[in-house]
Length: 372
Image (cartoon, rainbow, N blue to C red; front, side):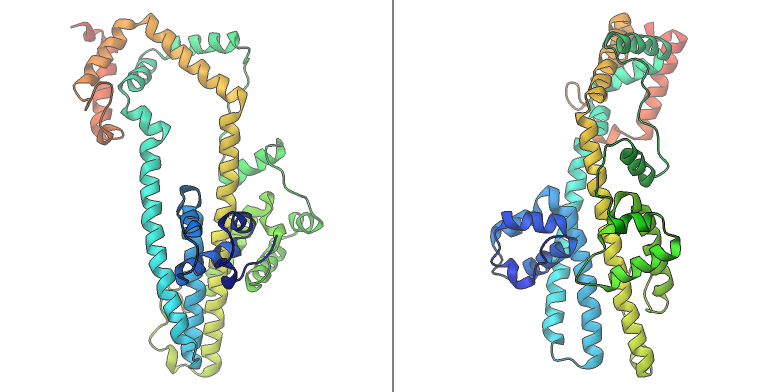
């Protein structure tokens, strides 16, 4: 899975050399996140890299994992009266501050993505909204026009992408149809044919090993079973670890330091294992996010998908040409709500008020009262 980084390496590594290392190995990204948070000599290019839109979610995930690692380390050091405790606590505070910063940047990014999404742009465009409502008013005519346009473009009756119950069904479908490729190693094949107990054991071993990763578990066809095993391990470990939940360590209970030493060590070991399981769950989510991003980009570039989108746009325009007065009526009704020519307020995009306006418009078109 590529070279493993140390925190000391990050200060001297050029940002462009870090990219393949943190792309291939999530633990390298965690290392870079810790270094950036705790070492003032890390280059500015590396700091800017982590804050780029395409890395923000991964950076936030890495900081979540780093804070978990450092938290269990401080708990163990405090119990053992380890002299390194003060330094480790300082690093934990630095990482948590960066985690809060990353959370704010991710929130800002989500807000921008939502406002710039096709759905939001469609909802705030008077023209696109009117087109959609006209299609709702004359569904049979639109279907006929769309079919004619599809035939004209030789699209035939090829069905749209099927709907999937979950992301793993989507990934399996993409794999089956050659949209995804990943090496089928002996280890991956063995796990693909293994029972749940074997998957759970492999997942536990992977979580315990901080230096290496079981690449087979990260195969696209195994991601769903890996996630199930991680969930089960988290659930079964949380109580022994005296954790807040399988997803959050929380603080150690007040009576922890009164426990007999063997019991206290058991709790600390369970917390370290749970932190590792939580980290692997973050890695799992990152794997799924990377795959779905690839599928989304390939779909956008698919000539057939592009042609279908163009056919829909043409059919919508043909429907406007057939019913120009009705379209003008819808635009006139929307104009009263615009904040500027052709633009509706974001607050109207998915509000009950919009649904009410649409209902009134479609009722008037259906009853023929719109001409009044």
